[in-house]
Image 1 (cartoon, rainbow, N blue to C red):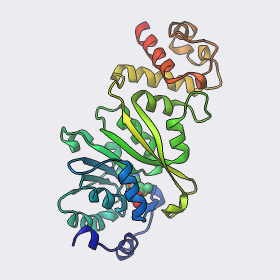
Image 2 (image 1 turned 60 degrees about the vertical axis):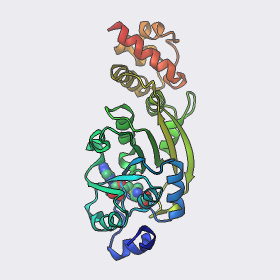
Image 3 (image 1 turned 120 degrees about the vertical axis):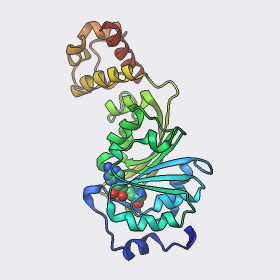
Image 4 (image 1 turned 180 degrees about the vertical axis):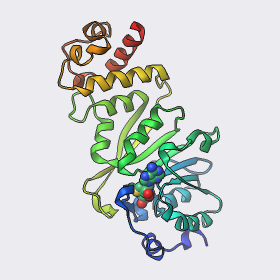
Length: 275
Ligand code: SAM
């Protein structure tokens, strides 16, 4: 069987007696028009290697394989094994399956030293920790095209002064360029989640901060946004307080929510220099 001879996703789920499980954050995209759109936004094709987290029924996986890319899909829910093995058999060797937890997956080993792109309709319960892992961990993807809850997408792309601006925006934007590329309504999913979703395109920066600078940035943002209504001289007291903030060229009376990403990088540098 080839990809275009496969039954529809809905028929496939029924044939395998599968349904969505809340505990695995499962909301499926069963409309291939939408999954093909996401694959186009990922800008992948022949010769590219894509790592997909959570293929589930394989709608996005089908669209990714159709682009000509080689896909490695990591799925935690073993119930999908027979269905995904059928898809792999129809994919002319372009789909490799790994059954396990993406949080502990060794992407560097999976990518085998070549660049790889991440594309995923992320499980809601682990979307943020996975993004942080890919942006601050030892392995960096060539690009990321990821579906999040709209509220999380807003927290990734927010600017200083926005309500959604916080730790996630600072870490994401210090390490990457991130922009929303597609809004997806709840009714596009089976079953529909309670909230709207959005696809975010993330391109890691070539000048990503070094690991010690990233660690410092994590410390500073945790303290500053842990008490976001307080002035920096108070929220950062344990890390150097007023002297630290002043040496970073910032106003000690300012609050975390108005400090742009460069300001947090300056604070991280000042903290490293003072140690
Ligand atoms: N890609 C499919 C789609 O678009 O229809 C399914 C998306 S669903 C939102 C998330 C998928 O991630 C589910 O298949 C779920 O079993 C899987 N999943 C949840 N947690 C995971 C983890 N830690 N590692 C790998 N897969 C996970």
